[in-house]
Image (cartoon, rainbow, N blue to C red):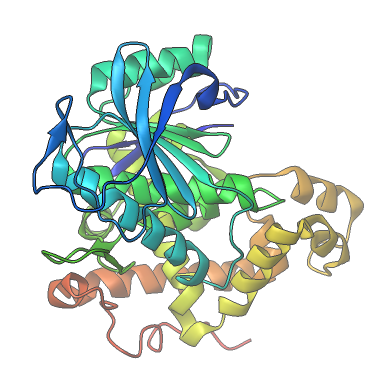
Amino acid sequence: MPYADGVRSSSRALSAASVAAALLGAACASKPRPVPSAPAPGAARGGLPVELDASPVVSRREWRWNSVEGLEVDTAHWRVRTSIRNSSLLATLPGFYEAALRNYRIGLVPLPAPPRRLESCILGNREEWARFTEYRLGPDAAPYLRMGRGGFTSGGEAVLYDIGYRDTLTIAAHEGWHQYSQTTLRNALPVWLEEGIACFMEGFRLMPGAKEPVFLPWRNTERYTELRNTIRRRTPYPLREVLEGSPQSFLERGRDAQLAYYAHVWALVHFLRDGCEGRYRPGLERLLDDAVKGKVLERIAASPAIPDARGRRLAGEAKAGVWLVLVYFDQDFQGFAESYERFIRAIVDSNAWDRLSRGESPLGPAAGTDVEHPAQ
């Protein structure tokens, strides 16, 4: 099933029917052309900027789809087809994508390289994106075309468009995780964890003149602000409701509800990594390692947390819910949920904007020590 996400200061997701991945290359004509060794600053060919950071670029060539003209750029791990005209954004993308992939592989737990190049198509404007989306998804395109700003991922390929320098990079980082996950994990993650990790991968700092960003998962003021607003309105969602929902189900309640969902799952991944003095990090590592190897069902079948056959069947089929929490993290779900709720309230109560801006935990160096799991 494709992921659809939009950005309007934060990512949003819309539902759509599952579609088969189309091969972008089948409809694209390209001509090999060597990378220029030293383009003049701001130089352009055919109205397109050609100045690229030479270090991560393996090859580049002209790219055309119908009347859309642009570039196809290969790095070691990515293929980016783009018609964007923003020279700064174009120059940043190759290094940004390579750094993002390194972050997917080491930023949370150690993970393997993808089996092939990950492919992104970034159009220059919404009109181009809408036409390409109709071509790419056919009759399934309608829900995506109703989005505000953003894009989608299907079959490991992302289709985005230029929505401004930082927002485009943010959604590229978010969708890039979906691309990595769809191509590399043999077992799909539950929706709450898949979306939570994608949000976890969004935070970054890119200093002027730097060739690559530094990814900092706490440096995500949109998710933090939404979490803070939700808790201060006294409307946080119970953990079970978050685990059993999806971006689509929360969108049915309204945009604010969906943004609150993303903030909750973003905080949940931080909790799994750092909460309760790292108590749940080994379980997160086991879950992701099992997903890579295709062994999640084996783990469920062998787990004493789900002793009956019907429960194991439901756990294997479910892409939402509490099942994997019981199997990988804690058989005392109530205690787990209470620890999570204390963790997110501690994040909000800290009001640590200075630490967030530096990409540090709002709870300080000893994150999680004051929100320990109750003694059992």
